[in-house]
Length: 80
Image: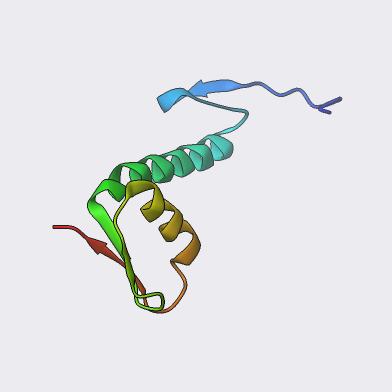
């Protein structure tokens, strides 16, 4: 697969292993986004005015944010 390409894998902060700095930066930002989304969905609700329902359970909130965030009249609201 990588014949003729000498790759050196470096171990960066936050246990990220990548072949170059750009890949490591991308992986770090993607990992931070995934972790932050996972932690903050405990404090969020999704109000779907098209289906007339409020989504409060954590796994369902994550799925709704991922799938319905660009649909009109679907709002992500903080519980506070």
